[in-house]
Image 1 (cartoon, rainbow, N blue to C red):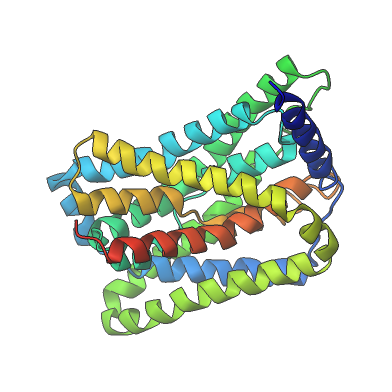
Image 2: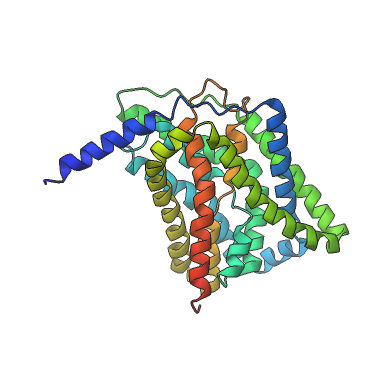
Length: 327
């Protein structure tokens, strides 16, 4: 009982601290947005170089692991995230909650294939899941963000004294952006891989390395103008992303175990559920047509950007641990 006041004090301090993030505006110039979108499109082109038409045939032959993995990505992950934002409602601000939902709506990250290979997982399954989640993201990313984000707004308005405005986002523009950033590059990547298989093998390794470097540089640039706030609030952002990412990884692993998947598949599904393409989330956030400059997105930005850093640390750490363990 003696600890209850301390907990309430911590919750109040954390909430008030996170509120300071809301007024932050992360604005890119038009040329900066063009460069950002172009680089991410090239990264998704590199992801598509792994796609083989034969994967679709294998899906028909052994669909259960693929369907389970995609369900983890597009159903379980957003559901777990929604449960978390409800559970942490007294600790986190609405923009932080929406940032968590945005991350959960993004498809799996392309570095998950490397992590799966390192962890002795099923690399072929990982590539297949990344392929299908990337393709389905054209529809599922706008849908999941709108659906779960809308549920959160309704929950917040029902339980809090303050009223949040309904989501005023042009989902047609979000859909259009995802088509341009993911859909078109994926189609081009599949075609390139088919007609230039030798070049594809060399190019995809380079693009995978560039993608990690690009994201790191992007986050550094975006944080530079807000370094003081980053240092001040990172302890809270770190806790939130740690809890969120851990819940995603644990959900992937134990649900795969529940469905009696072999050890290598369990490792693969764990990584695919916990590694998200947060770069896409940043592109959406930095698009002034989707999230207008007057919209409070500071909390969303900090969560999305830090997630992109942390999931590399957690994913590589878990992969290195599993690389030393037998299946």
